Image (cartoon, rainbow, N blue to C red):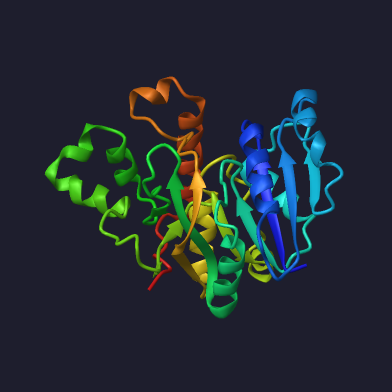
Length: 270
């Protein structure tokens, strides 16, 4: 099997079904499989995916509990047989029917790549979703969510953290990419032991990209291939939202684990 596509769903089953339908329409010269894992799979969620049971390209995994993102993805990868892994969020839609072929071709032509991601276009306004970031710094993350981002001393640092200086029309190496759509070589995934399960929902993607750079692999953004995304981010919100959204509080917990893990270590990217 050339490619295994991993989709972990928790609360976007309707969109996930659109995602899967679009993937099944992809034109490729290689075989691929789709592994759909559902966290906290209630009977209602299982019923949503019931129509997929007879599809030969699809494997279904129903987790009775919410395993979180890293563990949920890792468990799904154990069922995969592809030499390349595609980690894909449920809200992604591959509207271009040769998207997978172009991604896999580029990935195969550049063996130094550890993580590859396409451009994501928001359904709501057609803008490019910002999936690229500099490696996290605690002060920048605090500033981004508060009035501090407007202070002259921090404004440039926040802009750098959000990679606003990048030309998103260019193929380029970056610090890290959100794991909403990744291509990763199976051998690298196994070498790095997949996503770090100390995280529950966030921060496993900058952590994995950092370890990929340490393993002398690159992280590359490929804007020539575009996919659609719903533009809904569960980590969105400012300081006040912290008291209203569980996801933001979880983001802080996972961020603290990230900073503890990488504190005092050099940026692995040259």
